[in-house]
Length: 242
Ligand code: GLP
Image (cartoon, rainbow, N blue to C red; front, side, top):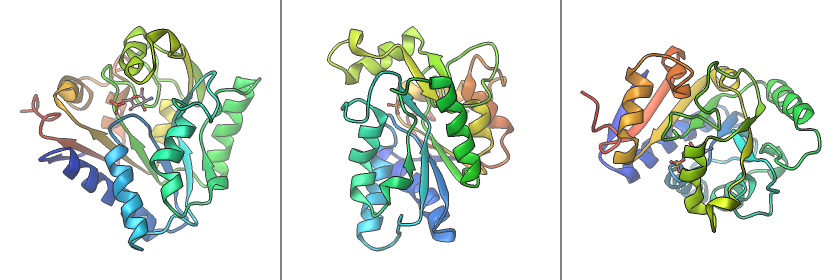
């Protein structure tokens, strides 16, 4: 595990964007696993500006997002499809037909999850998976639990995640109680993983996830067993590390 500590959020965004851009430069038809949350917003801005400057092109790239709320369609401004369009896809030369975000509104969620998993495999697997980190150690929406969930599945969100994400909704009652997420196994199958975390409020979980015991109570801790992980964190998020 390679841990890079940056001075601040902007440098974290640039360094992490460079990891993704390097993958696209090496293989213009690569498969990217993408994440939502506040943390990657700066990184997406960097990628959009690289694309505008002609430094990289997404025209042959395929993307799979980690997760989506159950019950929100892509037009809802808190859906992750909406987020991805607004933060990245609308600003780069990607073919939106090749951008996949789990559906939160399908009738048969279990069948959808199996198909999503299959689509990732058919695309050749994920070359680089980007991850944020929940305050409780969740990755995607894989919440702390007794076992590491293997594949894409429907999940009940924990009270702490509902609380944390309520800042983006008009009220806590509007936060969906369930989500569809790639499994921990799906994430671990990516050839490379880039984790971003920023701010003092992430310092405790950064320490637990990457220096504590590997256990499903802290889903991100499994990344300690992945052979190719880069963790990019700013000084505030690294403040509890020795
Ligand atoms: C959400 C997403 C995660 C993300 C997490 C942290 O719950 N499902 O993928 O990593 O939030 O978000 P933030 O970066 O806003 O702290």
